[in-house]
Image (cartoon, rainbow, N blue to C red; front, side, top):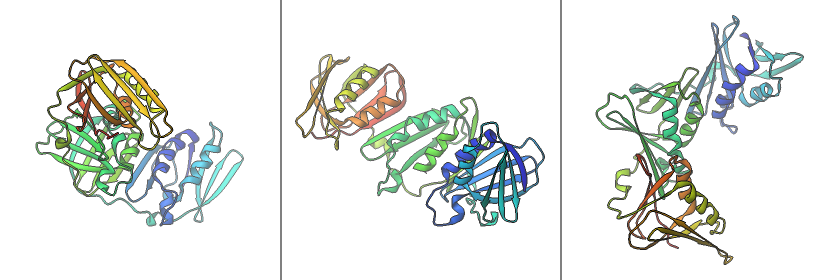
Length: 367
């Protein structure tokens, strides 16, 4: 195996692929990246057995074919440290990889390519093509609500649900829920649900960098696969049953508040400074035309904000974790937001004022 490549052309896919590779591995080969040269194409593969990412680069000059695995982190650090315009020469020489650029020369250890695990191909049951920007929006609007290390392992990921011409993403950590839907050209009549693990979702979002580009999604029984021009991403699915999110959506809230998103966000941020660092609780007091926001902490410090809102109903006092409200306001983009409440023990429903494709549920807190 022998090829030459511009530093920039190698570094971009190498950084993405190395992002999948875990530093602490039980199998040494998993901290390596698989390099394969065929014709004038170089492919780089990284995996942690849950998520696999393949990056493809066209080589400008004919190359000597071959395949080998090399330490991902070290190869990436070498590339990063070379000058921007460096031309890198990579050659396999007696089971070592020799990397040359200008007057620099590095020799790296290797492991055989056939030791490298591949994610098993399952039958693909459903395929759809989406615009990268729309899929990225779907993920960005919901991924913040995924659980991190919940014992209910099915919450440490995102539900993707496909039904007639709609793709919906839902994430929840048991205290809040985020949901976003988009129209998609999918010839699927039945509802089909898969749970993609947290790491898979975050890696997938990193790949969707070309707003006008397309991404092809294949949902199999045990895997999701996404392919763009330069990358193929595969992730195992979480085997579990996601909670029935439709039961969680509050129904029949009679108190409708419409407010300025940015003003609310700023007021919540300021109040949060003096909330209890552990529980992050704030108290909302609703009255005609105004919302009072209060916070206090064990040091007896207090913050209070008053903000004008469009509301004419009975007064209500309710507590929330301010971080959850800020997360929601942070992913919304409209000027006005609507908040639907019923009483101090029921969850709140937040939506953009003139847009129904996203919905956010936040459970109240006892203060």
